[in-house]
Structures are given as structure tokens and as C-alpha cells.
Length: 431
Image (cartoon, rainbow, N blue to C red):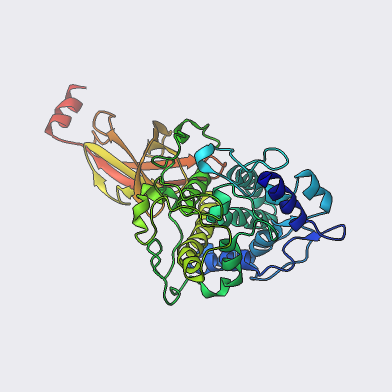
């Protein structure tokens, strides 16, 4: 009976008079605020300059819900409902805003039938944003705002527990409280009285490249077996956000006991009891709500920034040589070291004195080097390759790659190689 009442309340509370219009018309612009704070924590660099053109404002928008050109607009309109039929039939977008990561990749909420998880929905939006970026960046960033809304929901315990909520029978105190008090959290300073132990201030974007693709003790789900198209950097952001949020209790579901982001133990949040039971509905005190929100709202801002950085790095990939340096004089074995963002494989090649390019092959499974970069190593025995045996040869080393979303980058470094020696002179005389 409770499940039926919850379903009826969920539908009734979200249905509205009229034929169309957004469901958020009376809500504070908390999703937009968190998105904007994510933008503010970006470093002063080309990423912040470009996103500054598309971030928008922390306010409500009145578009058609199906198109836009700003990140905050997309974050707002992800809750848009075209008509009440979408609610009755379970096709409204917000049915796809849930994901219990301990249930599997597509373990979304099951109301009026099963619905896609928010991570699967976000990956669909990602594909649209990527395909549009080169020709229609405004719409691409609008889709990015929709993804940001979804990852903010992933940082909310009710959404990561698949715990349906509404404004009548099953209100969700945490979500309502955070929305009502949204201006109390920002990227620059910790709220007075906060005991947040996960987010040092001023806030910075979550480093997506450092996040694991598997969380320990997460319900026996082995995400390492996911197809590569699903096991993406975006997936890792959602997984770590949701696995952190589900270690908090919602109105009707106990807190999990598995690890949180970066595979840290749940006890990292020292003030919160591991596996804390769900309270009686509506019984959270303001003090308890502040404790939860002080951790989860800044985290949602940081994951919002993490998606912005990931999108920028994907559409603007970089590669650079750490070694050798330009103009270096080499002999013997040349060790090549390069770094890249959003590349999973890099190809090395070289040419001598302006001749044809010679491949050294591709390097994969690289080590993480920090600063969202991965390290790639290769080597060339220049002497065995016959380079510089007669004197100094001019060599150009190249490293290049194309990321999974089709964006490419390359770098070159020019060096000199001289392997001439007495043995080399004897070799020449013999020839």
C-alpha cells in the first residue's frame, strides 16, 4: 500500500494545471546556483574565458525546454515538463534523474516501469554535446548544463538510493532544505559552522582523471566489465558522486556502508556514522540537515566544475613532450616522455633530416601524472636505427593521438643526434 500511495503522491505532486510549463517555476534556482559556483572555481585560463560566454546566470529561464544556449539554462530546463501526459505516462525527464550505483549501470528508478539511470541519460546528453560543439557550441553547452543538473542530483542521497519523493506524502527534507538555503554555500568560503571534511576551500573542480572506475564493496557490481563506451571519464564522475551520496541516509533508505569517492572509506566523514539508519520521514533536525548539506552541496558544485573541465579537455585535448627538450643533443637510446589530457593512447614517430616519418608504435595504459594528465613513454635506439653515425642528424620526434570523442592533438620536438665515434669511423672506412 505504501508503494501505491507513494506512486500516486509522486504523480499528483508533480502534475500541474495547464498544458505546458516547467515544474521548477516555484523552486529556488539552486541547480543554476551550483552550476555557476562550479564555473567560478575554474582557473583563470581559456576554459574560464569560453565557459564564461556560455554559463548564463543563476536564475530561472522561460524557454521551450527543448533548446537553449547556456549552461545554467540547461541546468534549469532539465526539470522541464511539457504537459501532464508526460507525468502520467512516466516519460517526464525527472524519472531519469535517479541511479542506485550498487544496482548496476542502468539501475534507475522503477515507477510506471523502469527508467534509465541518470548516468546513462547523461552519457546520451554527452554524445549530443560533443557532436554539436564544433558547429553549435551554445546548444552543446546547454546539453552540458543538463548533465550538470544530473550530477548534482547524483550528489543527493534520495537520488542515489532511488528513493522517490514528492511534496505531499513523501517529501525529501534534504533536497528541500538545500534548495531553500542554497545561497549559504559558495565556491570561495566555507559556511560558518560547517564541518565539511571532503572539500577544502576555496573549492576546486574534482579531478576526473584521478577517480577510480570501481568503488570497493559497492554491492558486488564489477564496473570493470562495462563496455568501453560506457566506462568513460564521465561515468567515473557520476559513479564517485553517487557512491559518496549513498553513504548518507535519505528519508526512507539507510546509508550505505561501502567506500566513497576515490575509494576512501566511509569513515572519512568522521562525524557521520557508517550505515546510519534512515530517520522517520520528516524527522531530520535543521542541525542534521546542515551537516549533510555542508558536505553534499559543495561536493555537487565541485562535480559540476569537474564536468565543465572534462568537456573542455575533451574538446581541446593537449599533448606535450616532457623529454627530450627542444634543441637537445642526443646519442644512443633516446627516451621519449609525453603527457596528454583525455587521450588513452598516443602514437610516437620520428623523421631524420626531413625524410619520411617512421612509426614507433602506439602506447596505451599510461600512468597518471597529475593535473588531469597521463604519461606516455617510448624509446628509440638511435644508433641501432642508423641515425647520427656519419655525424649530426636533425631529428623530429612527434607524438599524436585522437581521443574517444574524435578530437586530436599532436606535438613535435626537434633535436640533434650524433653517434659518431671511433667505432663509427671504422665502420665507415670498412664500407
